[in-house]
Image 1 (spheres, protein in one colour):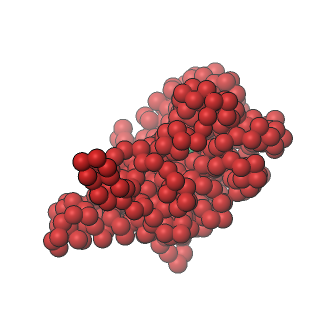
Image 2 (spheres, rainbow, N blue to C red):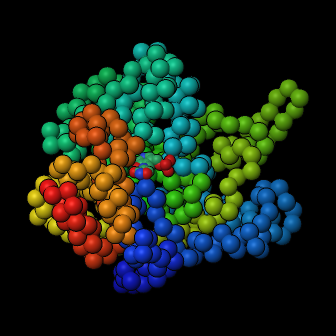
Image 3 (tube, rainbow, N blue to C red):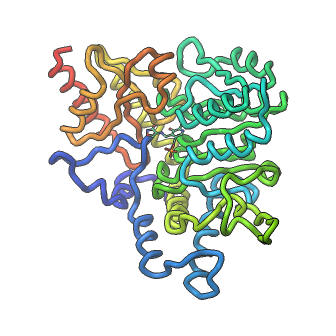
Length: 414
Ligand code: 7TS
């Protein structure tokens, strides 16, 4: 796209023309899932209408076309995140499944009793629970990198201290889905590798919103979901360095992931297919490729610039409201945060906030955001309301959100 145009982008998203509770839909829950452009929806229709067939087995035209579409999508993903080749791109259902695959397959083979596993205090449940289960199963110790004193980012001293325990694996998010904080995953990876740890980056909230390059970060594994980046639900990515994936046992086994099977033995298929047992999610995989094309056309740098602008605008506006607290870095530190703003209104439960927003046609999420340790134990909140932006959001939608907050304050007399 030569010039970034929100209005041109919006015209590609049919749902943005719909209403909710009789009001034009204002969608500010992009951290939960993104909306889909017509190009992605059409790719799904086109596959089912014109070349629906299983991949890697049919010797006929439409099966070849489906196979090419599915592999082609992986090539696009590999290029999008700077991987060496599609051999390093495993399709799974979502970020959660990607992290579980590493925690179970890699963890089983590499983590022993007394070993340390290191995560951070700002992780989503999907980057906590699989490691907690692994630690329990193996008798390993799960450690947390602490938040800094302003509860915005990671405490540098805590990182160093925890790495002194020489953890086997360090798993951390690149962007928090609650605080919006951007972690320096490149630096943490460099430090962790020095102590011999393997590094997994949860990129669920980063890959959709900014240019991410796995080679630049240097991580061993990286996980993200198509549904948060204009693609369909049910498809996600586990990136792994080729060596790491070659060494790893697949989580599931059966058809398509083997080269040969005899009555008493088997050999695995080549990467990435070794990790994809059974019929793949073909339609969604192909449509994911269209989502990547769309993001590339708009340009990730343009998307990041737009989100910085709208987030800064929202933070400034929220700052002017009495009794409203925002979490994470402020507008001054916009380089350190993504387009996610969790907030609380004194004396009002976030579920009531979300309900009033809903009555105004504004979709936001309220709750613990699947980060209960962070929200309830560290930030000491029962729940938080959250605005989260994407490429199609307008500044006028921020104005509507601010007006909705004023309405909440008026109704609750706070
Ligand atoms: N990691 C982070 C940082 C996330 O924000 C999410 C989803 C996940 C992992 C899990 O992704 P999934 O595709 O496997 O579900 N975050 C949210 C959210 O903030 N609201 O709904 C889902």
